[in-house]
Image: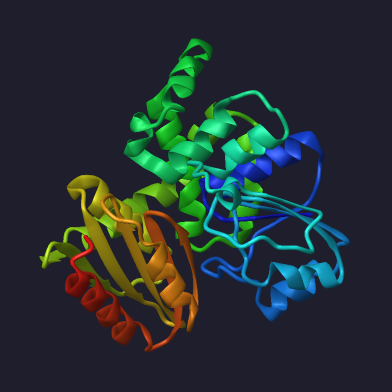
Length: 305
């Protein structure tokens, strides 16, 4: 079983693993950066689980019934019971995507699937990465950067509209090639719906003490996309709260500071994760506003932005 994140990097990483060995694939309930009781019960059916692009705080629980392998690039603590925990962060290194981690670990060639993961996690900033030179070389095979960007948007549309089944199906779609992704009618319809919703919320962001903040209410899984849009268009730091029907979410992204200290603060009470420039927090319904204000106060008081 391949257990993967629901975004483009997670899906592309799972596709790389699938290309090496045909397997089933599974993603946690969208929005859960942990394994809930229902998902744990489903995973108990498997005695080997390969985790890609997820830093699960409860990964060690899987060792109670399965052998596990982890390939990731997020802020993490070594999972001692894993057969292998391959994450450059554990050695103090930063990688732009999990696809690059999988490629390096298994000595795979650089191709469009690896590129999808990099672009998915870095967006326009991809052009500033050293890996961009590898992506440009794909043009000789007729794969253009703009097409890869569009493919990422299409793949990510499945989790944004909360279609978990479609997320898992996208792993095989990725293996079929860029043209198959670009021509998928259902994903193209998803994108139009989502684009309108993201634009509606992103333009409402306000700047307070140097930080762009936004409080929104939508059941689409777009908080990361909205935050990215705010930061990619304006630079700096953005802090966003989303109040959903069943939970609250907070997302922080910055081009100018290391947010890992905030991740550790959030982990003391909530499910939280991320990397140097990104933090995501899942909170109980109604708990978001207070913690949102706490984060904002910490940022502005310490002037860390």
